[in-house]
Image 1 (cartoon, rainbow, N blue to C red):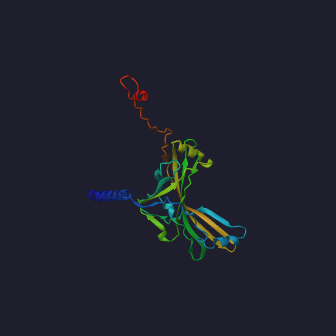
Image 2: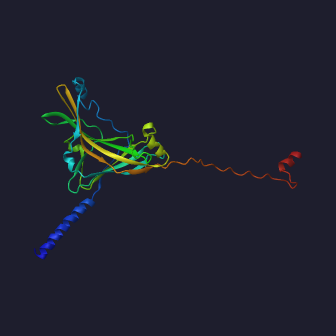
Image 3: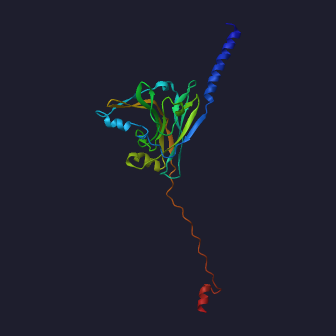
Length: 280
């Protein structure tokens, strides 16, 4: 191959590599949500339509199905992390506001995530199959302490995202390099279940926070008197540990110094002036 042709090929490869690296580095924050309000409940019976009636006529109880259905998420390259944690107020019993980030590290392919913040009505996606579907994401925060490094406690405060499969309005598309951030509230409860975390936290020592993104496709179908509910995992991501420390207030109570007593005025005879007057 002529030298000129080799140089052209080399420059072409260099340009491709440069463009690939540029795509990785040009990522940006595309959406953020503050979810510090009270968490939304799951789908109500009215939203689920005839679910309650289905269970009433179910023969031999209801069936269940579970499993993993990666589908398009099999090629995901998503990174889930905790990027910040702050107390809501300077009080040991106040909530902790945890900021989590989900970033698409895939250089070539976008990733779609559920982006509804209230429950959705399950939908039928195949006209030949009466199965109803919806997607749900659970975002939870865990804590562990140096005293019991193997013990992990779930901190109260769960956040959910929802979507109807096939409804593009219910999803957010993350292009390569893009990410979203969510602010979610959690609490440290001083009860027997959370005693290890609570005592460590209130004494001013660090606890390790981790968060999990658990995404599933949930299904429901009734055939005759047989009712089957399904839950199929589509994504399961866990963040790296994040050290969080509450600055415990000191027990010392500041005191205000009392002003010194003023010296009594005396007469030339050496007696207090008040005493001299009392003798007159």
